[in-house]
Image (tube, rainbow, N blue to C red; front, side, top):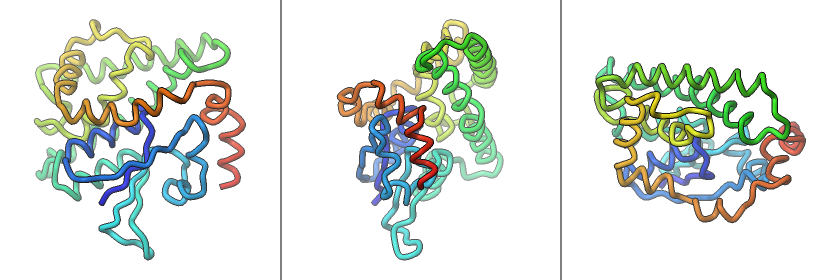
Length: 235
């Protein structure tokens, strides 16, 4: 069975959606990144980069224990191949889907994350950073808008891991300084994905637990500050 180690962030929600869409049984271990659980030795043994999400699969053994996978792109690809779902079987469709999955992992997610950070979480306002990352977020929304013009899904002609990877980030468009009225194709796509029951379940996973943990000074240190750097150097 798949064991998911996660917290309800956009990256965690990508894999949460995928597991709900697959419909296979899985277990969940909350990793409270606001309180430093991502630096615990047991989790670092699974995800050396001390980031959620990660999975283990006790049906596949490696070095005497369940195989583990970290990094969302790798996890989504692993699950798609294991269960034979949400990744086209033909070479062109598969390549196209991976192209947009990697676009999300290498460009869309990191840049939207920086826009969110400097607009919402930075302790001091840095005008240059806000403008830099908000402008880049707008550019990337434009890329996605052009891609979705005249099509229902991002890649491969069908709903896929590329859509799952992208959806949780676009849900937070206001935090990134974006207005979906400026991107009607993206807005329509967001509505289509939102209608899927598995997406709702995946997005809501651990939501109640997360609400109980405030984004206070301790959380800020664990996510962005000295606590994070010190824990990483000791791992």
